[in-house]
Amino acid sequence: MTDVFHIDVPYTDGPLAVIALSGEFDITTAPAVRSRALDLIAAGHPDLVADLTGVTFCDSSGLGALIGIWRCAKDAEGSLTLAAIPERLGRLLSVTGMDTFLPAYPSTDAALVARRGHRSTA
Image 1: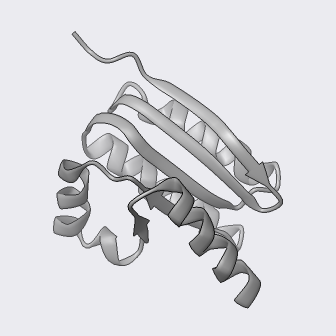
Image 2: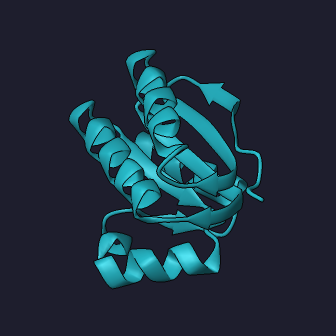
């Protein structure tokens, strides 16, 4: 039995938006995540924080979606920051070297503080 997957956007403020995921982030859910994130970027929120607190599983499709979102955010002069990464996904990011491109924080609040500070000094 798979976990029901949810995508929420609990926060938007200027260029910043939080996209919160819960459930299994895999080949069946990754396209919806990518689509929602690209909609946020197009709506003027190029600095995204992905809250992964509720993610119970992430496969290579989920990782591929994160990389695609990161590239699109970067093209829009924005960023993708990860928050509350599950341990297994953290290992996957480390093994692939993506942890050097995708900053990660222990909580969404910490990621938002970091993004706001980065934006004001950029």
